[in-house]
Length: 279
Length: 158
Image (cartoon, rainbow over all chains, first blue to last red; front, side):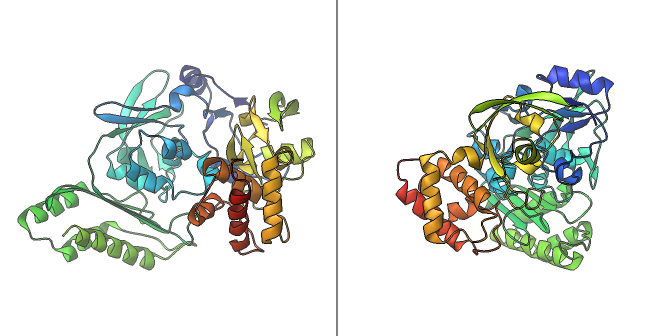
C-alpha cells in the first residue's frame, strides 16, 4: 500500500514532488473512480499520493487590474460562490456534475485530467487562460492550448504542479454556452460549445469560439476568429463560409456517448445560431 | 501505510487506525458500523453515500478518509438527532417520497444541504439541489414535494 502525504504548504508539496514520483490528488472525483476496487478495499494507487486540496496557496482567488488568478485547487463550488468570478464563467461551472461533486472537484484537476470533454476547458481556451506551473527549481507560464497535447495527455512533468490559472480581465457582453448531454446533471458531455463576443453598437470588437469533446483537444482557432471580425467590419458575414472553416477542425469520434455525425451537425447548428445572433 | 487518523464523527472525537486512502464510505460502514450511508454506484453518480464534511455535501465513496482528518463528518445518523431531520422525515413520509428507501438517507442529506443555502427554494432549485441523487422508485416528484413541504413546515429552522 502506498504512502500518503498531506503537505501543509506549497513549498512542502514541491519538495515532496521533487524527490518522489507521486500521484497528485486534488478533488479526487476522477482519480477515485479510475483507481476504484471492490467495496471495502482501498483504491489501487500505484504511486505515493500527495493530497493538495488544503494548501492555502492553491485555494486562493485573486484579482488585480489586469488579471484574475484562480488557485488550482479551488473547487467549482468555491468558484460559483466567489464574487471575484465573472457571472458568465459560472454559467459553465453550474452545469458541471452535481452539487456534491462540485464541492470536491477542482479547476486544476479538470485541467490536468485533460479530457477532451473536460467541462471547464472550452471556457478557458476561449478566455486565453494561462497556467502557472511550479516545481522546486523553476516557475513558468504556459497557455492552456500548449499545455494539453492530446486526450488525457499534457506537458506536466514529474515534480511539477499547476498552481494557478491566470486569465486576462475581459469585457464580453454576448455569451452563449451549451453543454449537450444525455441529461442535465452528472453527465459527461457529448459536445459543448462556447461563444463569447464583445459587441457595441453593432460593432464587433472581439469574438471567441471554442468546441469541446469533438476533437482530441478543444477546438479553437484564432485565424478564423480574426476572419469573422474582418467579415463583420466589412458587413459581409458568410455563415456558410464560417461553418465550412470549422468543419475541417471538428473531427469527432463515435463512442458510447454519441456519434461523430450527431456531434458534428450539432456543433454546426450551435455555431450558426451564435453567428446569426450577432447579425 | 496504516496510520492514526483523528476526526470528529457526528460530534464525537474519534481516532481511526486505517489506510488514509480508504474510502470514507467504507470507514463509516465497516469501521464505524454506521450503515445509513449507502453504496449505490461507487462512482459519485447516485448520491446514496452523501455526507457532510465540514458542512459541505460530498460523496463519501469518492472521499479518502485521509482527507477528512481533523474535520467534522456528519452522517445521516448524526443528523437524525436534529429538529430539521424530524421535519424532513415527516415531510418525506407524508409526500410519499420514500418507497424502497435506499436513496432516502442521501436524498435527505442533499435536501439538508440545499435548505442550508436556500431555506425557501423554488422547484428548480430543489431539482438542482438533488440533481446528484438518483431515485429509481418515486420519479422524483414526490421528493420535490417533500422538500417543498419541509421548507414550509420548518420555516425558520434553516
